[in-house]
Length: 417
Image (cartoon, rainbow, N blue to C red):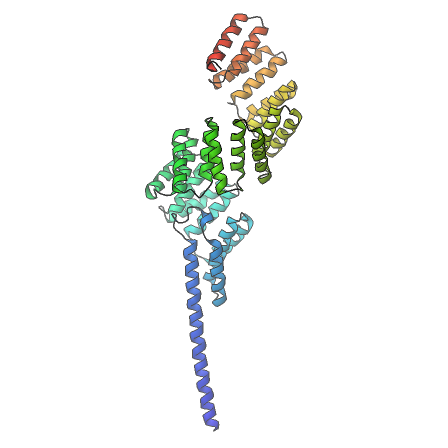
């Protein structure tokens, strides 16, 4: 009886061991399947995820968490860290993204994807120069890798090299002719190179190929507004807002377009909304100050221009507008300083030369005023204001013939307006 019991116990133990081994193998297989599915999600091809924001990182984290519970190994842990790094990047938590990426680098072999994530984090943090080495490393591993070439194009744009960006984008568009974000980027390159017609066409094409994102509509609206097509610009910015109500650039663009159309109240509401969404950005503050100045509320305008300059001390246009408001208040010495700051940051800003000439004329410095008006007239051949000011200066000097000539040229520039 005892021997039978021992045989039965031994048989049960063997069956249990076999069951446990089989179960463990099943858990490992399930873990490998989940990890493979997560890795595929993290490596989606460019047409399916043209931006890193489109990578389903949160789903990959969920799959890998489950895989780790089933069977933990170093590779799966590395994949989980990589997924967390992309997820944190998408949430703009770059310190956490960098920490997770470092963990992934220790656990996983060197790869194009990890190099590109390192570069993307650096670029989003505002350090494009730090992105150059990992992008070069990625391209050295796989010279034709589409995402590596795309990020190289983005880096070239950030570094002020639109021709190089254009070259990379041309190749990608030839490979992926129906990928809307590529046309949006090429539009920006065309714009930087001064070809606004080609830029406009690319932004329109980007909206046609992928109407789900706001940025092409914002870029198109910006060009339309610059071209004085305020109604079309307002429509484009409104389309952007239908796709992203949290985009301050779209609110600001629509506000400025509405102001150009004479809707000061609606425009001010839109600009204020942009200000609420992006309190650290100077552009909405400058726009609100412009509205104050237009209403004659100069003290409020001055306060807002100065607040904007605290956020962006190198903003030449804000210095220019501050100088204009100070000139209207007849605070000529302070206005002169403001115009000089504008020219320090943007020497070719014709309106700042004109403003500086006006305040120097008011301060009795006729010789230097004349030089500034001449410079302004040369820098902007369509602006009649420097010649009008020159005519006023000539009249004050008693040279009425020269005053008439300057006025006639100013009228010609204004096309009779």
